[in-house]
Image 1 (tube, rainbow, N blue to C red):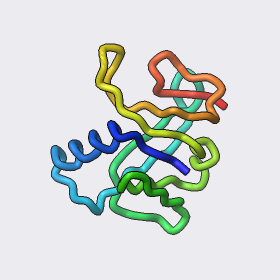
Image 2 (cartoon, one colour):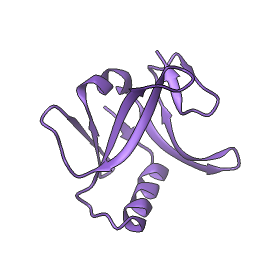
Image 3 (tube, rainbow, N blue to C red):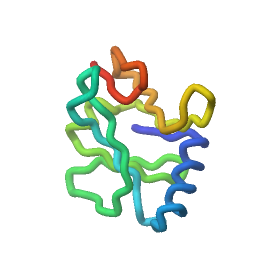
Length: 108
């Protein structure tokens, strides 16, 4: 399962409106090679659900994850921070053994 915090849900709603998207747009979370720790998170809106996608729903937010990325993301919580130490979405991933300083990449 992948979950979202209340702050992340609120920010997703704001972005949907700002970008003129509809409620049928879901959040797609994936993992790609790259970054200083070897793997990077990718977060985007997507209205298409592929047959191989795993679909999770938390707090009314549908999250789409491809099978390959799911291995790295199980148990992850998507959060949003707008504090002095940085602004943006953050991944709280129990599978990550190491993360880079900016939180954009990780390794297992």
